Structures are given as C-alpha cells and as structure tokens.
Length: 58
Image (cartoon, rainbow, N blue to C red; front, side):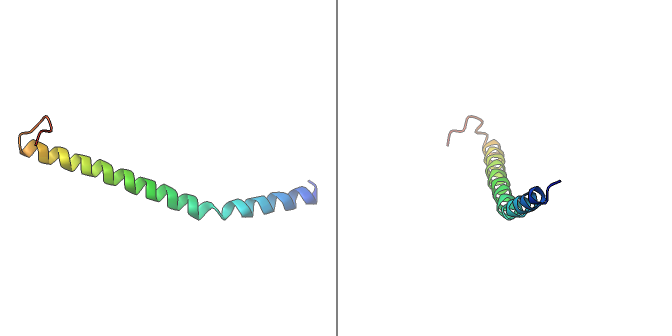
C-alpha cells in the first residue's frame, strides 16, 4: 500500500478514537435515563395496584 494511504488511515483512526469516550458517555447517559423512566413506571404501577386503582385515577 502507498505510505500516504497508510498515514491517512492512521490519522483518521486516531481522530475517530478521540470521540469514543464521548460516544460511550452518551450511551451510558441514555441507558441511565431510560432505566430511570422504566423503573419509575414500574414503581407507579406497583403503587397503583396496592391502592386497588387499576385505572390510574387518584
């Protein structure tokens, strides 16, 4: 392969690796937020069933 192509590929790979922590942090934040919403929904449903309020009326 051409040395210029190898150098360009290496530079592109190192530039792409710079975004990896930000991508990982974004995925982690999204999973955390989705988990919080789902768990809160389950908690609300569980508390609603203990009050015998299956239709969501207060």
